[in-house]
Length: 271
Image (tube, rainbow, N blue to C red; front, side):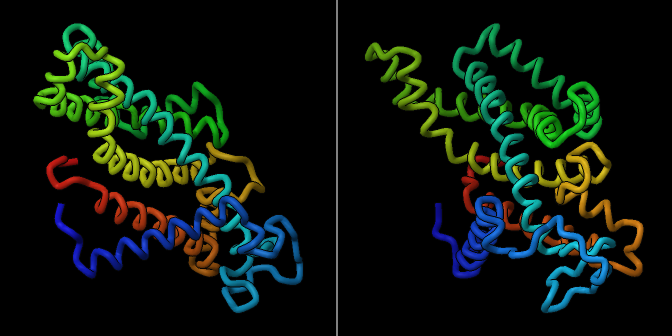
């Protein structure tokens, strides 16, 4: 893979800074926002963004920046959970289908076809209705929706790697299936799957925020990002910062993750 030019390097560096910042919000939100995200101040309602309140305040006088920062602790881990579900289940299905072929591949392919044939939003809504409301259940639903994409890519990578001479040599030398998979197949399939995982994380952030916006996520007054946007949708024309500020944070995070995914993506993978 060719070294990225200066512009690409700058973009990746900026993306890493954004991701590191949001990671800091998740781990230690109090270090970035000193105010209590739940503290009500009747004398500071609907304050526009200023040096005192970077993102303004809401109808109860709560500092919106503090709520966005603390909301990362709910939204980001939920997205990571969704990606973990997709990687573990989808990766295992794709690995089994690509390595063992035959009847296993036929069964897995049919499962993936079913998952990919149903519109993702409709499938997620159906699963949330089954699991129940809440951030964890929304994350699980988003993760299940992403299983098909991960399984399809993993199967394609395992098929590509399985045709290489060194895989044949490893089998002929007497190595077991577990050794071949762990030492030769998985290490060579990591990079394209990691690039897809980054894309799925960005999609999970959007999906979880969308579900929270619709009221399926954490209950108020939890400062989940999608819920914050929903709370300000009724006064966008006057108190625009209530929805714009958390929406801008989501957009910046998604763009940063997509930039990082583009850097990780091998040119020949064709994701």
